Length: 128
Image (cartoon, one colour):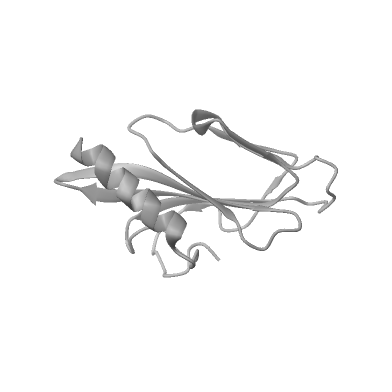
C-alpha cells in the first residue's frame, strides 16, 4: 500500500510540475533511450507505443525514456520516465511507469538518436 501511494504521489508531482527537464532524482538514472522522427512528416509514419501501459501515439516527433532507480522506503524500485513530444506540440506528454518486471515499448519509423545508452555520469540535463 505504501509503495503504491508513494508511486501515485510521485506521478502526481511529475504531472503537476511545469518543468520537464528532469522528472527523476539526481543520480538515479542508469539508462537513456532517445528516438526522433527522421521525416517530421505528420503522415503517421512515426509512432510510439508503451505496451505495458496501453499507451500509443501517432505523429510522434521525439521520445526520450530514462530508466531510473528510486528509493521507496528501504527498497530501490525501477521507474521508467517517458517524455513524448508530438508533431506540432511544444509540451510533451509525460508517462511514468513503476515496474518490477520488464517494460516494453516500441518506436515505429523512428531513428535512434545520439545519447542512447548507459548513463555513466549523470548530469542535471539528461533529458533535454
